Image 1 (spheres, one colour):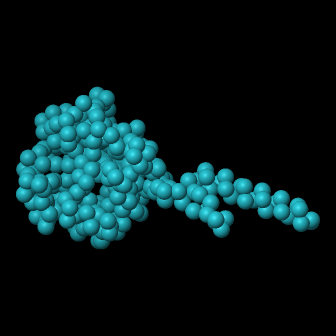
Image 2 (cartoon, rainbow, N blue to C red):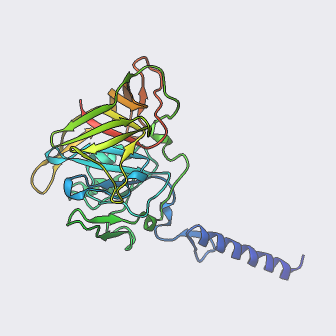
Length: 313
């Protein structure tokens, strides 16, 4: 093989590396190695979005595309949602609101998830910076990611274009939740309605047999997306947890509650028009939550969207 031929082969290989790097979101460094473009290390995986859930924020956008929706108590007994996306991303999600300390413990079960939020209490920001999450509030996300609109008034009008975050679906990203999916287990009690109350919010889940889903109402009104689609879940988990005051508070001086998602306790799992008494256990923040029957057998969920409502034990 001549030197010219070897040179051509090396040049062709370099071009191939460059093209592959560009396709994967990388740049070529001066030494010929592949480096990351800004934001390209975000890659695939879980996107968690903090979503406003007071009256002026409704109807929300993109909530129906989430794989899991966590319902948390916040200041003054109100509620806020954390929607987790791993299978698909809708064009728009929102309204986006601020993060809480509870979110950081809850999200440690995932592999460095992206967290989209509007901001946080100033003393909480250092904890977010140190947490194993990719914090993507306005100012840290690409300029096209967030916008104000939706016909709502501030602060309930901040929306997210998730495609701008350069994150996307990832097979197996939800395996770390500890959730298991499968056929309906034996047992359970027939149930067609369940209401969970917070001090200043309530959620009602009605089983619709002919649709095979739990229709959702919030504060007495049927929940819909901004496009008019009814919100529903295949599985609803009412997880009883300790909710205690944290060291943080909002601008009005209301103390932010902290929901303890590590530990063990009781739960009620709703699927297929039945309620199953359950036990939950999460050994550490890095672990998912296991749900079992009272005799210790794994309790599978129905395939589809899961809502987890953290009710005070």
